Image 1 (cartoon, rainbow, N blue to C red):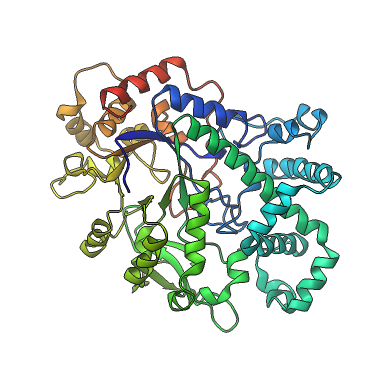
Image 2: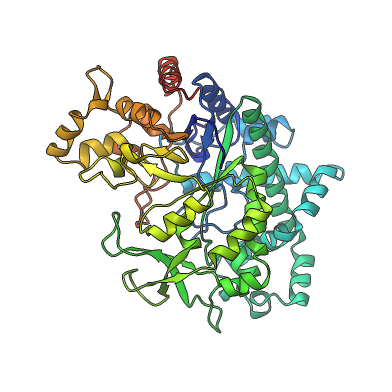
Length: 500
C-alpha cells in the first residue's frame, strides 16, 4: 500500500456523541471530520460497520452479514432533513447516558424511528435511487433482507431452528414467504439503502477535506448470519449443517487458554472452486465504502486455528493452511493498488512475515507491545519500526495507554520508560508523550485511538478480548470533550512529526 507520511484517529461511529444514545452518521460525525481536518489528520479509522449478530453482545467483529450495514448507525437527524421523520419523532427523547451505549434501550428506540421512516418512505412515489440500489446490491441484499425478516419472525438468528423448508432455502418456501411478508423484507432493504446513502455522504465529505476513511473487515462472520444461511457450502459444516469446527486463536498475551471465538471456519476448497468470488466481492464491496481496508486477523488467510466445535477452550486447536498464494494472486489481480492494512498480531511466524513483506502489505505496530524488556527483535519496539506499516499507541483490544501505564505495568517498568530518551523533560501529560512517540515513528501511518488523545484511563477501554462482557463496545465520547486546545496541540505534534 502506497501512502504518504500521515496520521489519523481511531474512533468507531458508535462512540460519537449523539442525543439518540449511540453515535451515528449524523452531525457529530461531520463535526468530527472537521476536527480531524483542523488537527491536520489525514485518516479516520473505524471498526466494522456490519450489523452485529445477536448472540454476542454488540461485537462488530461477530457480524450477521459480511456485506450489510448496521442500522443503528443511521442518523435520525438526517432522516428528518429528508422528510422521513417528523419533528415530533426526534424532539422528545428518552434519557441516554453520554459516556456509554445502552444497547438494549437504543435498539428499541431506534427501531421505532426506523419503522416510522419506512412508513413515510413507502407512502411516496417510486424512488429511482432506491430501485437502483436494490438492483446493484441484489447479490447480497435479497438474502440479507430475507434473513432478518425470518429472524424477526422466528425470534432467533439460529436458522437451523426455522422450518426445514426455509432453513434449506427451498424456492417455493422462499417465494411463499416473500408474498406473505413483503413489507418486512422491503423494510430491511430500505434500511440498507438509507445506511449506505448516509455512509457515502459522510465519506464524500471527509474526502473533500483530504481525509481518507479506513474501514475494517472482520475475518469471520457469525454462524447466525445471512452469509452462512445463504452459502453453507463455503463453511465447514457437518451433515446437520452445524459447525464442524470453529474459530479462535491459541494461548497468547490476552488469554492462557486461547480465545474461542466460535465462528464457523471457511471451506477454502469450496471457495477456490468458485474462484473465491464471495471473498473478492466482499473486499470490493468494502473498498466502495472505504479508501483503505484493514483486514482483521490476517493470520487466518495464511493459516487458521481450527478448533473442534465441541471443545470448551481453544487450547487443542491446530493450524490449517489456507491457499494463500492462489487466493492473493486473485486478490491482487482485482485490487492491484493493494489498499490494505493487515492485522498481523499474535502468533506470527517468519513465513507469515515473509508473505506480508513479499506482497508489500502494511502491517501493524503497537507501542504497548513494544515498550517492555527485550526489544531488540520485537517488531513493535520503536527502534524496529519500518516505513510500510501502521503504528498505534494501542488498538480497540488494548487498554487505553494511560490505563495500561497506570494499571498493567510494574513500578520498575514505569521507571525504565521514564528514563528513555524520548520521554524528555517536558511537562507533557502522560498520554501526549506516547502520542508523540507514535507520531515520530518512521511508520508511514500513525493511528491514535481517540481515548489516548483525550488521556482517558481504563474506563475508556473499548474491548477486553476473550470476554463477552456487557462493558465491551459501549464507550462513547461525551459532548464537548474535544476542545480547541486539544485540536491545536494535536496539530502542532502532527506538523512537528512531518505528518501534516
